Amino acid sequence: MSRIGKNPVTIPSGVTVEVTGNVVTVKGKLGELSQEIDSIDVKVEEGQVVLERPSDAKDHRAKHGLYRALINNMVQGVSEGFTKELELVGVGYRASNQGQKLDLALGFSHNIVIDVAPEVKIETISEKGKNPIVKLTSHDKQLVGQVAAKIRGFRKPEPYKGKGVKFVGEQLRRKAGKSA
Image (cartoon, rainbow, N blue to C red; front, side, top):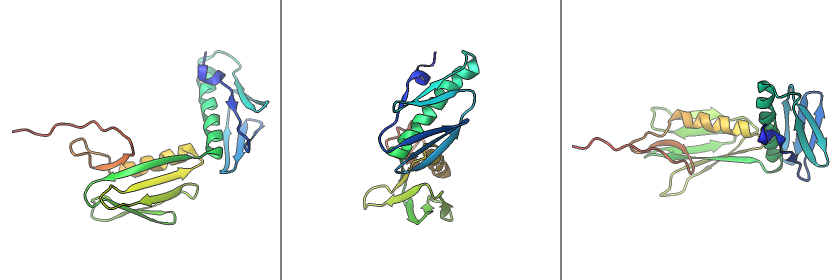
């Protein structure tokens, strides 16, 4: 039995959940998200979202926990939001933003300029003596993770000195260099 799928999702105040056909729509103070759901029954009752599966087939068991987690992330996103912080480790690595354009200097011959989706708010923090930090905030967990992974993919942290773009708090596996 899916232990995750069995747990009901509690709906906080200020959040509304609507189920129309096979689409679940969640509205809150930070925005609106919707998710298409197949082969799982979704019911809203007494301030909770309850998911039930029609059978114990492998496909139904897998989707039971998946859709419960997705709905929970949607509820959490429209009420509190999600934040990812990326740290630029390296000499001369810089980040700045003008609106939704993020300008990264990561040691290549040219700066990398990317347009970020309007749902994601960008903030760059540069303090003297500290590594620059790029802070991404949105109500959509999947979108924040995707944008953060794209930025990290421009220059992943290398294992010898740890230079590159890493998540704040990420533990890197370091290697010993050549020793004579």
